[in-house]
Amino acid sequence: MKLDLLVVTTKIKKFIIKFAYYLVLCSLSFVFLYPFLKMVVTSVMSDSDLINITVNWIPTKIVWGNFKVAFQELGFKTYVWNSVIITAVGTVGHLISCSLAGYGFARYKFKLKGVLFAVVILSMLVPVQTIIFPLYIQYSKMNLLNVAKGYLPILLPCFFGYGLNGAFFIFLFRQFFSGLPKEMEEAAKIDGCGALRTFFQIMLPMSKAAILVSTVLSMVWHWNDYFEPKIYITNLGNQVLPSRLPGLYKLLNMEDSMELVEEMGGFLFNNAMLMAATLLVILPILVIYMFLQKQFMEGVERSGLTGM
Amino acid sequence: MNREKEKKKQKFMTMERRRVMEAYMFISPWIIGTAVFFVYAIFSSIKLSFSEIVQLKGFVMEWVGLANYEHILVYDINFMPIFTEVVIDTIINTPLTLVFSLIIAMLINRPNAGRGFFRTCFFLPVLLGSGYVMQQLLQIDATGSVGVGIALPSLLQGILGETFSGVIQAFLDRITLILWKSGVQIILFLAGLQGISSSLYEAAKCDGATQWESFWKITLPMISPIILLNFVYTMVMYFTSSDNALVAYILDQVFTSKDFARGAAMGWVYFLFAFVMCGIVFAAARGLSKDKEA
Image (spheres, rainbow over the protein chains, first blue to last red):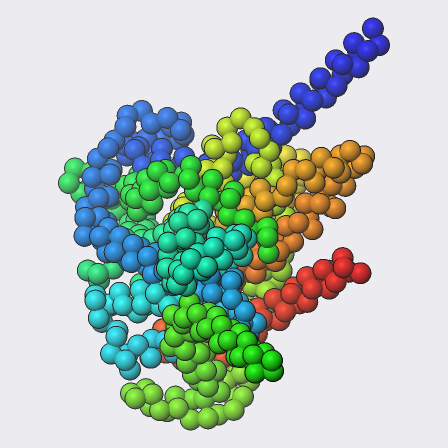
């Protein structure tokens, strides 16, 4: 009887712990999901739903037209390609240069290693904003400013371990490579395999996890960044997709203050359309992430970051 | 005999030299990058902060010593208040971010139902972007309050009174922002937690350690390198994020007022602070690891 009671109480205790655990998890994820869901719901609302305060989550009718207007207003078709080019080239640059440098720092011993790696950390610490102006002058002296639609100043550093958070990726690759066993390389060396070939044919195929993590992060950061594009890309037609948003938001706020609603192709220029535009801007990255999600998470788990 | 030894030594030397050559081959792109995109910019920015631009065309500079620094630290009425505010914000937010992201990482590290869903949830902020999109989604206004965050229930607001509930609401806003900025940190902590062998925990359990004890004695020491990495990353993120008032002010100086030299000086005052902070953290980390060895 007493034993039974004990079993029951431990069961209840376990249940309560589990319940509390899921409660905490769910409420935390709600903080993240809420603004996102709000955006998705608002993006398909009709004009009357937006004003109607009884309509909070479920729109009376779904208006896909918001997306159509947003698509046009963003100039999605032209600007998305600019973003794709910058993201793709920048990511490839990061993968090549940072994996090479990370491997060099992880596997070799040389005199200046400590000093040079300190410089890597230092370059992570210096905000882009501090040195962007001298860099700008430097590019203009080198006549690189308006080369390749003005993308060159953004993309070139990526191939040399700099650019958006380049040092972070060097660090990541270094951590990863130092966690891999040395036997494979030694075997390859005995068989007469050169250093570069060892790297490309043996080490890189073994480091899918690190490559995946870096790819996703570099992609996301490049896609969302609009500080550098704002400064280097002078021709408006060559701008990136996220840089279109501030203009749209400003337009709406202006209209609010004038209490004026502009009619656009049968649809109203309103908050719903703005949310649709915001969703469109991040949609490509969301879709890509959905495909990579599983491998990405597995990659994170196997990235071996503890072996520092 | 002797000659043979010499020969061996020589061969060894060349091997070693070859290794060094290989090492430099691997990091040579980065070295070129450092020379072209970093060192020059750093030095000219430092030089600029001690000079005045006499002629914008062709960039003729004149050395003025500490005048720019004097100006921003003594005469500029905007710089110091913004600077102190950003510094205090960073000092509060960075440890909070680390604590929250570690808690979340530990929560989703347990085997549970809906693991994939929760992980995607917590990574969502990273995907949505750190800058403009997030600001709009959370409806952050100029005063830093969050429109769509954790809100105090109106019933509680009535009980607590206006001033007190205002303080709590400000705190909740901060938590929302911090949670939204901890995506990458969660991922990195998760990677670290996965790397800890479960046999360590089992052994501790056999020796009668509670979960609380094994957290302090196993988890924390094992992930301390990641704590360091995350600390640096978090601080840099707060320092450079686009909703940072000081960054906005510096950019305004440079690109609107065209006051390049003062902008550079501000940047360096700001960087110096970040550098000192990181130095303290690195020193503390080293001191801790020495304690462990002793």
